[in-house]
Image (cartoon, rainbow, N blue to C red; front, side):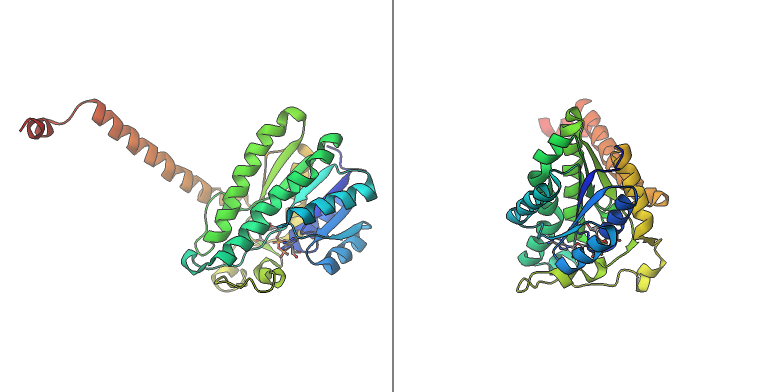
Amino acid sequence: MDVQGKVAVITGGGSGIGRAIALRLAAQGARVAVADIDLGAAQRVAAEVGGAGFAVDVSELASVTALAEAVRARYGGTDILVNNAGVASTGRLESMNDADWAWLLGVNLMGTIHGVTAFLPQLRAAGGAILNTGSMAGLAPDAGMGGYGTTKFAVTAYTEVLADELADEGIAVTLLAPGPVRTGLGASSRNRPEGSAGGLVDVDLAAGDGGGLPWLEAEEVAVIAVDALAEGRRYAITHPDWSDVVIRRHRAIEHAFAEAEAKAEAAAAGPADGARVSERG
Ligand SMILES: NC(=O)c1ccc[n+]([C@@H]2O[C@H](COP(=O)([O-])OP(=O)(O)OC[C@H]3O[C@@H](n4cnc5c(N)ncnc54)[C@H](O)[C@@H]3O)[C@@H](O)[C@H]2O)c1
């Protein structure tokens, strides 16, 4: 897809990766609608890209449907949907209460689903493209971020199946799976609804042990994301040197299959002599 002249909607576009994708798409000639729960942030980025800023809470379907209508009214349709809004406070699974789960699942998973539900009619009419921001934590889970990883694994599954289901219609669907990126994500609860406090806490992801991680700037991630989107690729990988964490997980699963196969073969070969004796005895 040539993004020149296309209408792109970016959720979570007021900060970090979303803002950088908005700048990158605009630099390539796209007309950009920046949507965020923080309207001021959306409007500031919209001013940077010469686009329009919108308020949206992606966890509410009605809010995303209203966004889709507002974008249609302003631009006539949508060619590119970037489902990027996300939150990532941290904590052990046992520390999470229902409010934590509702918030993380509502923004990260349901927000992605709501974007597709609300915008698919416009994307179909345009022969458009979708980019969903998942995470490396949706390909291999991270200790201390089990809630976040649970939502991002679900985004991976949703995106892969969506890509298969929309392929015949010529709508490309890309999963962006970033590793560590310097953004506002470590202060996610700044946009958490009041009264929904739980056990999760904000952690400066780049502090302490995290300081040694291979941090990228959001602008570097945006180049990778927009290239993958334009080329209609299934995955946009930002940290190719981190393949080992995914490969290790897949090897452990392959090993479990091999063990199960060995057990099934042993069972098919019949019980051992000792077992036969005890069965008869
Ligand atoms: N930063 C990283 O290291 C990293 C790594 C992997 C994946 N990601 C993903 O990248 C995406 C963007 O995050 P970021 O790192 O740029 O963080 P960020 O905090 O800088 O940006 C996230 C944006 O989402 C907005 N937002 C939060 N809740 C919302 C809601 N309910 N409705 C609409 N907008 C909402 C925030 O206001 C913010 O502008 C997220 O999906 C995140 O999970 C980030």
